[in-house]
Image (cartoon, one colour):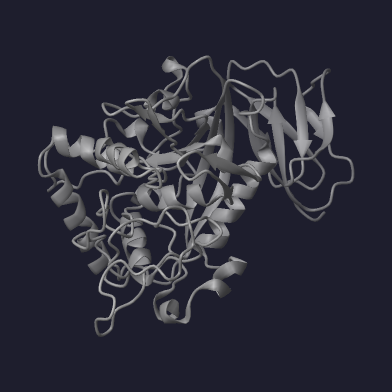
Length: 420
């Protein structure tokens, strides 16, 4: 998670206004530890074991299906589909190491940089307007955003889909101080030999939550830093890393100052005594400076708190953990879900798909369709229908490629146009 914070962190902010920790991963783990003593040790041991057992299907590309839930109060928070498409593109570039800024990785880290061979496919976009406010606290996370009954949006089959909720996350507050929160994600579910009750509160609460401002082409003003920080879609890259079993590169040590005892369970990430403060200080070396074989802090790593325009790399060890998690703890994400498609889940599907110039809507749900828009991959509306639905739609000379059909301004489906 990015923009993590809990009690000690806010004390650190009070002592030093430059201390800035934006991810809620620590709160997730700490809450599990308090309710289930021994959880931390079991989690970290399982993460280390996952890295050692990474020999499974090493060359296969794993594809994860993604469902976005846009839960909004205002139109500003109701971000455009095109931004979500770009977020998927960012995930794919970064997890496949096809991002152009890999050239900025320092030579000393080239031997450990790796292509995760994990790809992401946009499956659906769901939109829910709400009157609720989503604010984390020291006693709970804003999981209401994941529940329709509480003003959010219910997850889609969390065993087989990565659900990502996009909303406005209110800052965490303590003694009048605020710590902005950009996102959070629960670590993987417990294995059978883990402490009883150490899994997430409920299966339907698995997934990633991100603030809508992390997806826009914009910057985010951080009061503690007195600065605008760039948002390049890497908050989601970071949070998905947590979802797939990665810890912060510092091992979550160094909250109140440099502490080199932390361990992220990864052999090829250098020991780091505290998180970066959303900067790109390549001179930073918090542990082992001057010792034989010492390496500087890896501020280019996606699991640090470095600036998003500095991050560009996962290591081989981190990739090993994520791929092992995908064959064990979250193996359903890469399983065939042909029997759990949109027809069964939502009752609305497009046929034929792919198509060469027309389609119809099969609707077995209770939804009454009153508008339909066809958008290109950049989110531009290129054709729309507002009345007279007979279930059959002719496409106006569209080129082959990926398009999106938005129904009632709420439900978005993919449509592939093939060459005739």
